Length: 135
Image (cartoon, rainbow, N blue to C red; front, side, top):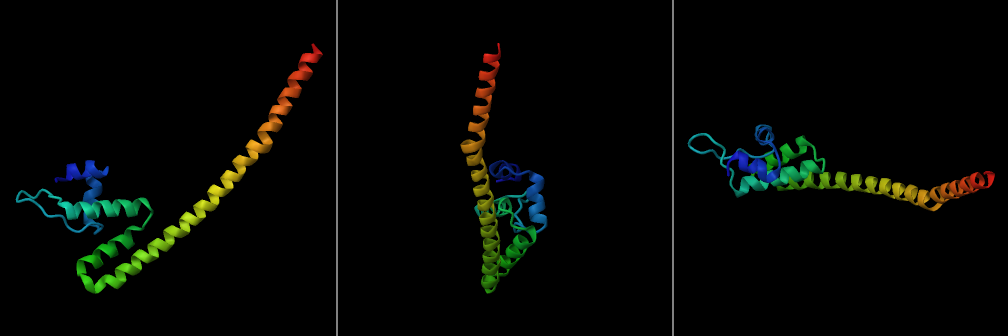
């Protein structure tokens, strides 16, 4: 696949793909004899992985280090696993924090539904009733 096809497939810009390759977020992509990037399945797997990790907030530095270690081979498996475990803990903490925020929002919404909205309806009804009697 050429860069335009990969950009469309993963909803990224061609500039983003070039940047990811330049800073080491994806390993160097093979090129045709004319110098055009020629993405294979393996390359697309990297693009998909990096897009997923970036959308979850994984830092560029951690991902670049992970990719670099992958390119060094099996001797780095422990270090790679450590990076993944660290990022997993960070994301799990974020999810827990967001769940707490979601719970607070749910409680506030319930408060409005249970207490505020009925009280407003009651006030409006009594206001209309007083206005009708005054005429």
